[in-house]
Image 1: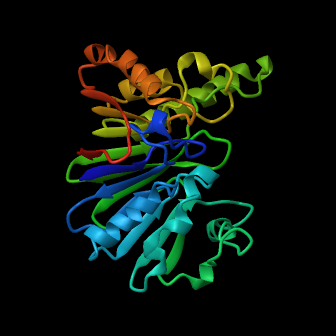
Image 2: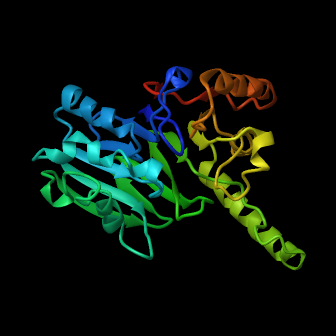
Length: 293
C-alpha cells in the first residue's frame, strides 16, 4: 500500500512562502492499494486536490471511503470542495466517531447550509451514506481496519489499516493522558486509568510499519498548551519507540511553524534512530509526499 499526504497542518490553513515546503493545507491523507476502494483520512482543505486527482488520474475509482478522526473545523472544512460529491456514479461512505448531541450527518450537513455555502447537501449528486464508529474492528475492501479513541477535547478516533502483512496507523489530535482534575485525592485512581489508557494506545500502534502522529508542539511549548489535545514531538516519539513502529511521521504541524523551524525540530529527533534499532526513519509529513509501505 501507499500513503499520500494531501494536507498536514493543524488548526487553520497557513499558506505562504514560510510554509511552502511542508504545505499549508489542513489534514488529509489517502491510502492507495491496487484493486481497493479509495480511502481518505480526514477532509481538511487538502481534500480538494485529492478529489481533483481522482477525477483526472483515477476516473475508474468510484467507491470512496472518507474516515474522519473528529469533526473539528480543520478536519472537515474541505469536504464541500471534494469534487466527486458533485458527480453521479460515485459512492461516498463517510465514517466518523459516534456523537451524542447530533448525528455525524447533521454535523457535516450544517457547514453546507445555504447561509455558509451555495450548494446544499441535498443537491449533491453522489450517493452518500454515513457510518458512525466507536472502538471496533471492521473491513474496508481488503483492508482490516480498527479504531481507537484518542485524547482530545471532542470524541476523536485514531485508525489502523492492515493488508498483506503491512500496517499503517493514523493518530492525529491526541494528547498524552494526564490527571486533568489536578486533585491529589484522585491521584492513585487516576494514575491507574492513565496507565491503562496509555498501554491500550501502545497496543493499538504496536509494530506499525508507518505511524503518522500528532506532534504539534515543541516540548517547551507543551507546558502552556496543556489540555489543548495535542502532543509534543517528544510525546509522539516516545509512543513510536515504545510501540516499536518502523517509521514515524510528525503530523498536524502548528500553523505558525515555519518550514525552517519544522526542519530543525525533526533534525533534533534524528539521534533517537541510533537508540531504537526497530525505528528506521523519522520525518515530517509534507504535502505531495507518497510513502510506500
